[in-house]
Length: 375
Image (cartoon, rainbow, N blue to C red):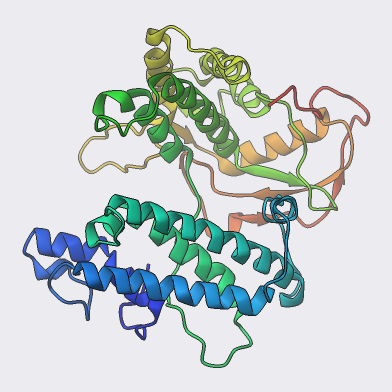
């Protein structure tokens, strides 16, 4: 989401150049889609080139100001930018991490611009820029997240106002899995993934979709005093759901019977081979009973998560917390509760949050659930 009234910074100018609403307005000859202050026409090639050139120049300049041309090895960059869930208590703690990210962003952005030039036979054209507009949009919003902190002590500095939603639901992941499975049929010739790779990738993504949906049907996240999550074995959440059908109401399918599909996906992920083709579409159809939304009668409540209903969220989440404390082998834990990815009755925003006190496990040193069985 952005505000079209922002000052015309290089970032704002590039956003206007690649605006899908602008293109839609022109192609449909309907000004109601047109962002405020944007001409009712497609950008020219020279305007697209200027927008790209000025934006890249700005980002390169900022990177130079923050990293001062310092030599940083690729290994060092990777070590820092791929850190898992970093958190920072202050801007000073964030600065080194932000600068590493900015160094990598500039290098990768320049590589993307090379691809845009190749698409235009050595030139930057509007159509070439448009082809990569989704990538460029992500660059703009992701860089904003870094730069607003790096530049927070610079009076009057502007980029653009706006934000993007980075979270991905299991519903979206399932859509990707389904699309990957069929991509060789619908993609343009010469542009599709290798068919075999696409099939295997589909299975890996499907496994993630199932794993996330099982976890988010419960939506309880244990946290220890070091702010770490437990290393639960694969299938832990699904087993709890299967053991408590009274807490999860599914229409015309049994969540417990998806365990076989999930285990099969894990085998393919581990072994990386192409199974019988019909098994892939069958697995997608079976998993779709959980991951797809269901049609409802006119006037009834609809949700992308309506395959399962949780009639009493508090009872279900309390039951899971007790199950965890009974089966996990060590530590003291708080529990963060969120809204489940399901139809829920009686949910209130004040139900989302972290419990007050750390609670010790009830059966220390048991090893039933505290180690992952593999990735």
